[in-house]
Image (cartoon, rainbow, N blue to C red; front, side, top):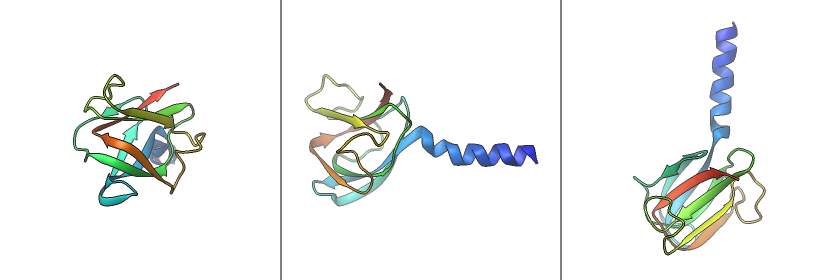
Length: 113
């Protein structure tokens, strides 16, 4: 019985350790789309489309920042980058809203703040 409870808890809590977006290749949440899950305190730079806009599907953990970068390695020294509170505390990074980046992002990351 306890093993089942532990497994259930792990399954339900694993999504709280990441934020999830639907990334679009064009502004205005148009074009090809791909769902992307970014685990807290990680960078994802491979397998992503050139992201011009995104729609938030789920929030990350408390005090996490969601970053979008023009290079492929979550480098804030690149030409373009922006970050938002990923825990629901941002007035821009809101569930079901379309967010235009104003540049093409090739990597996404999450970091503690």
